[in-house]
Length: 92
Length: 377
Image (tube, each protein chain N blue to C red):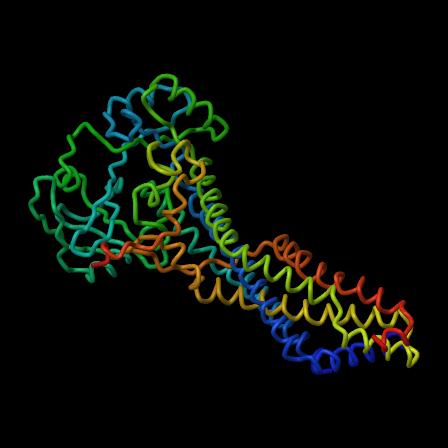
């Protein structure tokens, strides 16, 4: 019986999280609208996720000689950029 | 009612049987849950960020036109703007002024930009939250920048851009056109690139083609391509995470397969005793089915719940080193929980169903053998 209770609790948590997801999506609506207006007014083109190099900061805008740049939606040529940590010499 | 009672009794027996080998089964359930957690975290994260990118960038410029010189993005003369304006279907063309600045003091890269309408005076800037954090500065402070001549120019921070927009503004430094041109020495008739607005969205691709034809040294980038870029990036990064993880995944598959399909001598003996005490072959198979379901369903639910908490409550803290790369300045953001039911269903059918079915065939083989011979081996 304990196992059934465990599964029921897990399922209840999963359902609660689904409801949380639905509420989160609804609550994010106004914020996304404000961000859209900002993107539109500043004429932004990219997300600010990876600021280490110009071709990672603006992957859709970077030139053809850098990664991603055979065309704007091409694969990254240098996956090491995603995986290598900062060399020790640069940390000092 | 009798059917339900029977299932309940078999489930009770299965659980007590699992508890007799609790160490082994707990280890299996833990590894199983970790595997589901990593797979689900990757799926949740990449799907949510792609969806967010798509929604945020849906109002990005319809076409951005860059000038290419020797394969590199170069500054653009405003005469291109006048030429592109004449193309039928183009509503407006505006020059954009933006660039990068490496702050040697804090070792962070900023994006300097001139907004179409800058509401502050010359000598004033608006900065993103990431810049404020990395340069340990706030509204009202002075922020110095090295100009093209090597001299320091100080700007007063008049505004901190909102933290809710960090995903697009974290590294931004907004300044006036005069300040930007002065800092980088950009002549008055030059801009970084052009943002083109098209009257009819259906004509965007045609107009981009016309721009490329009339100005062969330019590269038009349409909004669809910008959004697709983010699809590719997160497919790739998600793929890399899965490739790294695939060794552990294979080890788990072998472990789980071995555990599920190869019955131990003790389990064979147990089946023999059950058969000798009157259990039908179907009952034994049902018991093993419940055993597989108990382990895989519990692990699946545990993995999925922790993956959700990891991605949407802790902002995918375990993925941060992979996502950050070499970046010093990284935005703080919480993803909107966009969950793809198709992905959850795929994960379910790839984990729970194979494990549960893998337990049945060896059990059937053991269950059809004579109980006496099974117990003697």
